[in-house]
Length: 82
Image 1 (tube, one colour):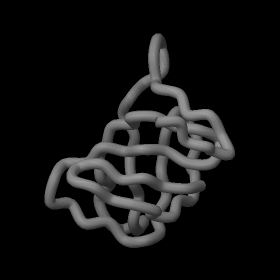
Image 2: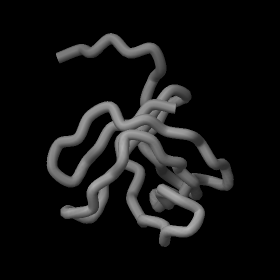
Image 3: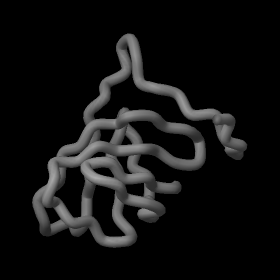
């Protein structure tokens, strides 16, 4: 099944870390997650089950912080757009 996407998604490999941090509030502890794949416009993240996320948060990954919007959630995985 071919999906038309605005940006090509890639899986982290080689020296690129798969771990990222979700920042909900500067006063709240960060939530750790794994990056399944990412693109210039969004990412697929894998979280520990039972961790609810708000619709908007910041993602700290590979030394950059991006403002995210929750697009979809299915089981432990969520899709976000930047």
